[in-house]
Amino acid sequence: MDNHAATMEKIVSLSKRRGFVFQSSEIYGGQNGAWDYGPLGIEIKNNIQRIWWREMTQLHDNIVGLDASILMHPKVWEASGHVENFTDPLVDCKKCKSRFRADQIDQEKLAKKQCPECGGELTDTRKFNLMFKTNIGATEDSTNVLYLRPETAQGIYVNYKNVSQSNRLKIPFGIAQIGKAFRNEIVTKNFIFRTCEFEQMEMQFFVKPGEDDKWFNTWRDKRWAFYTKLGIRMNKLRWHQHGPDELAHYAKEAWDIEYEFPMGFRELEGVHNRTDFDLKRHTEFSGKDLQYIDQDDGNKRYIPYVVETSAGLTRTLLMVICDAYAEEKVADKGNADDWRTVLHFHPKVAPITVAVLPLMKKDGLAELAQEIRNELREEFVTDYDQSGAIGKRYRRQDEVGTPFCVTIDYDSKEDGTVTLRFRDSMEQIRIPRTELVERIRTEIKNYTRV
Ligand code: ATP
Image (tube, rainbow, N blue to C red; front, side, top):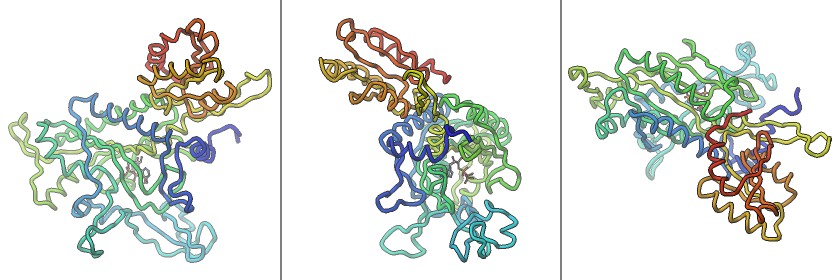
């Protein structure tokens, strides 16, 4: 095993040490399946979210946004099939009390009812609903049960008429939404990969029945191409098509984009043909007519088909960190072996774009550096660091993936030039400070990972 490979352990440790992600309620021993995004983590998360939003709404004529509430009428989840079908098969060990998803353990052991951890006896497999239940109002009884939404999609379906009519949208059109979703996952592991509270970035595209296959293929291609914009190494991604046994209750066809995480290939995003299942069911359960009247086709009435693209925002963040992580041998201290940990984030994703570093605190260098930082912060997310040797400071910035460092030295005071250092190549160039903004802008635009 390569000692310098990215492992989940190293990523969890770096995330905590540098303020990307913390365990929820850590001082109380932590809360399973819940994580908090620290100062640098939230910057990356916001960046991913912004890039997705721009891609899915602003760069399309016919896709609009929505922010539906997390709490919805409980009938929504009956109609959607989640009350009945959104379950995982669960078994418990009677001896060691471990809990497993029956579909994820050794099937021979399951048949023999033998615990994979301790060899004890397993319970019968039972269905376990993944929705979190809560109550609204003062009393806790079955008449006021509410669910925390397990997907953002339903908020879009129940609003589809409101949105299309108020914005005079014509089929085909899409509605995009980013928001929290909750699932009472039986096994939460691998850091923020599978959590009970997470965020989704979903887009539901409404099409004419019969045109769904065509649009499904279009969206499959577009969603694949999206990951180049996040700077992901495309050879770490692959497609997985759901076989008949894997298809969700609503789906006609489903393909996942999978990323090769340290623990192996895992789902990142699903592209689903949900047919007219959801809108038909909402018509049935609400008694409201959810047909679309197609003015371009002789006022024909039909329930649209839906192609869904559903990505996890927090899971994408994990992918971005895993993909960026590298330990590299550098030899800038004589010939001695020296390693750096570096995050090769795309500059548009990186939490800090430019760090400004005065060589010394004294002789007016700190003041000059602050002045330059103030110029840069109008345009970029900046950091300022004046403590420690310059090499150490570069390493600290490498470790959080800052693509550019600007160093101010004595010559800067004399001739107005500064050193611009590049994270990936560690190359340093000397340029007039007046050219910094334009140069960094161009570098971001033309960025490709080496
Ligand atoms: P899985 O098979 O991993 O449970 P799923 O197929 O149920 O996932 P979808 O319902 O298609 O997932 O959800 C769409 C996306 O939401 C997933 O691709 C994933 O990125 C994200 N997601 C789903 N469940 C979780 C979770 N528990 N924690 C973090 N992200 C999640």
